[in-house]
Image (cartoon, rainbow over all chains, first blue to last red; front, side, top):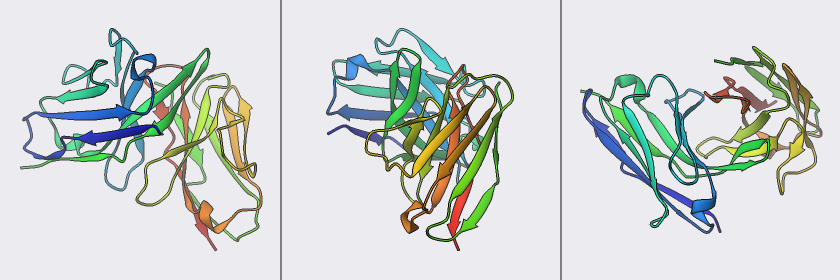
Length: 121
Length: 107
């Protein structure tokens, strides 16, 4: 059974840092792209970043590029999202997702339960 | 960035109704649109990928259509458990972008 379990969320002051983790199990982690999607309270879904299966290529939305760093440890089947210079607009539930990417298909086929990040003084 | 515009924002339907919602892309995305369902308090789930392909285990009352810039998502014979917010997403190019969602309520 595929499982994605996020951790590391919490309350942080603006300008500070936080590191999210996502522990994956139930599939061959190193074969899959992975991604983070976030959802601000009462708002819609917003893609944050994606990472290639080997971890060598990353993609970010403009509003987090230069502040967030997405990485992975395939030996530990774990993802990391280092979030620096946090802003109030980063307040959201962050979902870890598995990317099904085969040929021209691309979609998020498994999601974690989400972890809440609150940026406030 | 590609903007995905969903309509309507919300709708109220009765059990057994046919429900149709729309998603319009600001530029040609081919068939690279997926549909997700998010029930209250839950993580989203993929229902339709590549515009019209039903994900494994998804009931056949859920269908998707379209290509280019105009896409539709239909629930035939709506059930009470279909109460949710539905999002379209384009996977044609980064940044990946979602529509703002259509909230489906039970009349």
